[in-house]
Structure formats: structure tokens, C-alpha cells
Length: 412
Image 1: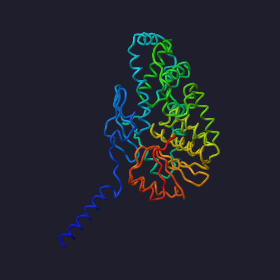
Image 2: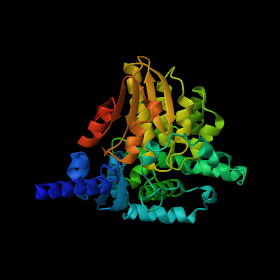
Image 3: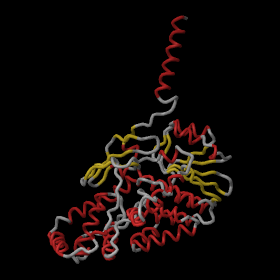
Image 4: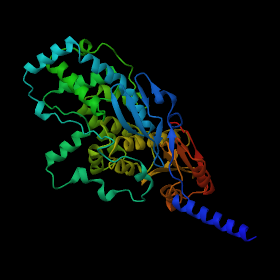
């Protein structure tokens, strides 16, 4: 009996130590196999593969994309899909830059004076090492961040021209005296099926290089590039946004977005903050404006613009854009009454159900997620979390125990 008692005590202590090591019973986000973390067409393909070990942070998967054009770290399945879609363009541009045609055109372009060169502003590019990424910020704070919201747009320590330049950096290259150059860049991106305002540093550099050669060297793009890739523009699933991004001059698109956002009630300071947000390219801004417009009659949409103005990285911008797109799809099927952007975006349907869209990869039951699941402002008789990915069995069990309906692998 004494031995049995001692054994029981040891088991209790062992269990307590195990619980403590996991943060009081919470899960430690796992390292997944590549095949379990991403769709098959993103695991391996022509000239690329992702490393088999994929760490997660409780929401997002961190991929190592190994390609013939270089290796990079990518946060989230959405961003991975974007980067993989850009690989054929990088490959084609790299091959074309070695041809005699390009070399001659480059030399011809160098002989011509470039009046607008000093006015061209390079788009800032976020990298895994340069800017902290991750979506946890959307699930770990109740405040909307309004106290920091307008920093970029209203920083009184900067002159008006400096603030304008900051906004310009999120809308691609600026060449006020060379509108033809901007058009060449968009035409090239369309021919290659990529975002002309991409945050991919290597691709942005190549687009700049070829657009300058085509414009200043006076050589047609069809002469420089031998292939055309069907437009994919992974950042958007709508043909409307693709057409706008490819066929509308940058300045006109900026104005169009501003008017669309004002039409839903967004303030000018909110719009300027969105334009200056490092994570939001002009393409992503266009998609956000389009989807918010699709939420016709829904109150609270300006708050989404405000939250979007705080996005610092590509994956954060994609998270918000896709979440709003998921809600727009819901609205078309079962009308939404109001939308909120408190920490993250969520909505209340006219039938009373609360819906939280979450474009995440793999959700673990962490302390942060427990706080989110228990938020008082998310209480409702019926509430659903729409996941583009999935939850761990433990996380799903905990959410359901709190009255949540968990919909995994939700589409947009």
C-alpha cells in the first residue's frame, strides 16, 4: 500500500510538472511536416520545394521556400501561395536579362537622360528577418489600436512632402515625369501574371529593371519577354480587382480607392493611414475597398479601414483582406448587420449569429487563444469561427466547450 501511495504521489507530481512545462495546461505549437502544413501544389513543384519541417506559432506556419531563384522564409499558406506564383516570373526575367536583346536595350537606355530617376521611390519590402511578422497581434488585444492608427498619416514631425512620400511607398513606384514608365511596369506585370506592386524584393527589382529598359531604351516588352503567363494575382480572387490593378494608372487607382472608402464612411485620416501601411500594397488596398463595398448596408466598415492601417507585413494584410472577403461571401448568403474591428475583424448577422473569419493555418490551444475564445465582446447565443486552416484536436475541443462552432477549411 505504501508503494502504491508513493507511486500515486509521483504520478501527480509528474502530471503537475508536465502541465507547468506547457504553460498551465496549454499546448506548445507543433512543428508540422510540409505535407500536413500546405496543399500538395505548394509543397513541391517546378524549381521549388518547401523544407519538410514547418514550425507553427499557434496560428501561422513558417515555411522555408527553397527555389532555384533563391531561398526565403515565408509566413503563412497565403503568402506562400503568393510567393510560389511569382517564381515563374522571376525565372523568366532572370533568363531574359541574359539575352543579347536585353543587353543591347540596357545599353541604349543608359545613354538617354533619365529626368525622372530621382523621383522614383522604391517600394519598401518586408522580409522575414527585417520586420517581425505574425498574426497573433490580432488575437491578443481588445483595443483597436486607434491610439497609433494615424501615426504614418499625421506625424507632425514630418513635412507634407515626407508624409506624401510615405504614402507613395505603399503604392509602388512613383515617376511623376515618366507616366509611360509606370504603364510599362503594369504591362510587364500583367504579361507575367504577377502583382505590379509586389512586396517581393527580388521581383520588384526585376520589374523596375525591365520597365526602365523598355521605357528609356524604347524597346517593346514583347521583344524582351518571350512568354505570357495567365494573370493570377493571388492576392485577389476577383476578376474585378485584377482588371483594376493591371489596367488602371496608379494615380487613378489611388483616387478610385479613396472615393470607394469615403463612400462607406471612412475618414481621410483612416484612408491615409491605410495608404501608408507597410503591409498593404496598392493591390491589397484595392481588394479591401472592393470587398468592403460588397458589404452594402453593413455598419462599422470604417473600423476595418482603421485596423487595416496598422498592418505592417504582407501576411497581416492578406489576413485582413481575406477575412473581409469571407464576410462578404457570408453577407451574400445570409445578410450581415454589423462588422467590428476590435483586435480582429468579426461580424454579427441579422439572425444574431456572431461570425469570426480567421485566415490562419494551424491553431493550437495557447494562452493567447484561450483569452480570445473567452472575450466578453464575442459572446453570443450562436457563434462561429471560420478557419481557412484547421485547429488541433485540443483547441477544437476547448472552443466547442465554450459554445463555439468551428468551421475548418472555410473557403472565400
